[in-house]
Length: 366
Image 1: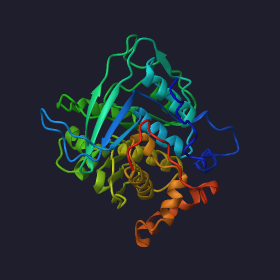
Image 2: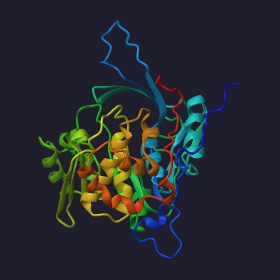
Image 3: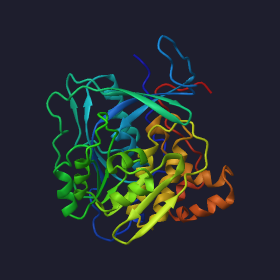
Image 4: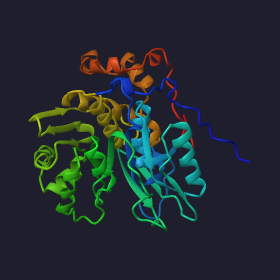
């Protein structure tokens, strides 16, 4: 028998964030902080590449990691920040599906109660080729035999939910919104290149929209991230345009507030999943009631810490790493001063915690 993978919690200081969130009163809390659904992928991530291999050639690299991907990126990142996360997704009954289920449920503490395993269905796989602080991806995916719309969902009580608007918004999202949950939305790359404007009509069901700059400009037919943010602000209460190494731009159309914050100045090893980690940080900061600019800074902090590691979702930071980064001297004190607002959110158990990171299934040479 092959050895069992280690499923020890990489966030030894992990504690529920409920008492640190806005509106956390004496009454019973909701079942979850965040509920989401979507497709989970097996991510295979090659790093240290000089570029893409030309046809007929081979490149050998010593950097390889693997981790849960797709919607799991944001689920793991939110759970590591102490949010109670529920996920409705389908899992294949193959080796990859078993690994993904155990990693999410046992190692990362994600509630998979609404999820299901699909007999005879192959787990989707994405290969990410990381080079020059960016990446290209190849994905294998087959339709789910019994359903294209995901597993049946009974909306739980939650502070927030997360949806993809590049497909019709699931019926449970408006139902949760009517009960007071904030709806966060994102979308993926349009493989057809059509970028249909009617996709944006789905934003009527969304409170916070988090596209990246390329997607935002393509859908709005604008030529700058700032222009795209202004156009989207006419459709959704809060829009955040993620600009990668250039930071992020946000507009709150309900208050008229605008903010633009630069990225954390760190060396990027692997940007896989960084946009999802950014979104997780923004969700936490929103639920914590932080001002718009601080929400952006916290999201940039989480994303910046994640790109320093291989392995996508398993590179998302725990509070111990956030605390350690402040003591590392990696960035000037003048930069750290902008993140002082984070200190009250760091659990006491993280103060002296030695940072431990979840291992990918295959470790790169060091």
